[in-house]
Length: 103
Image (cartoon, rainbow, N blue to C red):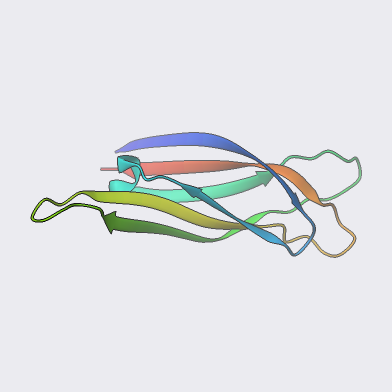
C-alpha cells in the first residue's frame, strides 16, 4: 500500500461559522485510491482558539473526449469551515493536507 500526503496553503478570512470551497484539478492523481483531506488553521493570535473542519469532499469526473475517443478528467472539491464559536478567532489562513492511499 502506498500513501502520499501533500500540503497546500490557503489564504482566506474565515470568521467563525463561514466556509470556503477549495478545489484541485483536473489531474489524473484523483483517478484512483482513497483520498482524505484535513484542514489545519494557522494560529496568529495568542489566547485565541481557531477551529477547522472539512465538511465535504467530492471527486468529479468529466469526459472531454470527442467522437469515440474518451478523455476522462478527474477533479477534487472540498468544503472547509471555521467551526469556531462566535467571539473565537477568524481563520486568516490554513493548510490543507491531502492524502491519497493506493493498493
